[in-house]
Length: 397
Picture 1 (cartoon, helix red, strand yellow):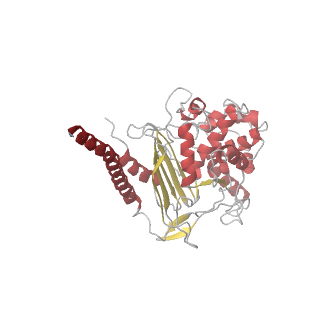
Picture 2 (tube, helix red, strand yellow):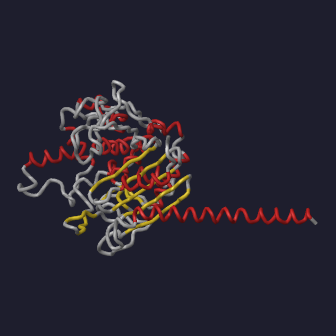
Picture 3 (cartoon, one colour):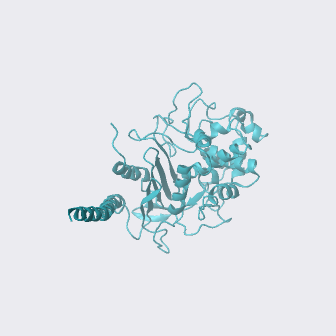
């Protein structure tokens, strides 16, 4: 009788323990979701432009939520399917395209601009694919060159219609021609570090030349389709469409104005990809599982660049829109910042362009990923993402 009683009690314990554990887990998950939601629920109102937030750990989604609307005309609610312009978040896809072409044997990291574009001026003889990927090429800033070209032509401002506008956007080939007119770079390759949109526009052109396909065709074929990122688009105005599109906005005098496209919005390699939380979860899985490249093949992208003398690079001292931390040390691989956060290894990137702010933070040892996509420029997704990280990362001694 006692044996039967003990057996019955044991049986009941076995049955009840998993349910109790599941209930505990559910309460814990719900508590964390509320904590994360509290970070974002007050930053926008239901009928204003807003943001989409994704938090994943160990390949599972912990939090996925949209706040606000995709535009002020239809006022469609932002959800996990809303497609945002990624801006410089795009650079990791451009870098992946180059890595794939190197793996295919169609490119070498040591190849120079003059080897790839024989009519490029002599200063391109020491600019390699590797220096372009890691922002140590010294390539001139094409937006500065656009401004100089406008002034030289007497157009723009008070001198008649500008050469480039949101309606007549600069194209990749025009960027390359502006760079070819220069006699020298900003600095000798490898001697300094400066964030370079020009470098990633040129890398987009290199992807096209090496593959025989346009950048806009190569990425869907080699990256998006294999990963079933079926709603991620390399967008170019007048050439294709973005479904479930979020439009960019800026705040002016306490009111929002749609500011979605600029004269530089048609250069895809430095910032032209649109995507959503559902597709970016698949991207996160692919990075974690080494779906497109082996861990060894991916390693160059996750190795911080050093200058020619072996020293650590620094952000330029002069402040501008592309200079996040003037004068401070910077750790950058290929398409990824690699600076640790409070002792936690990470790969991350922000994006900032007319109407949009974005960030992806991937904490490597904790398998934690945070993605925030904003269709308004008055929010700071990097700061918000690190608030969430502080909740989920263990403290380091």
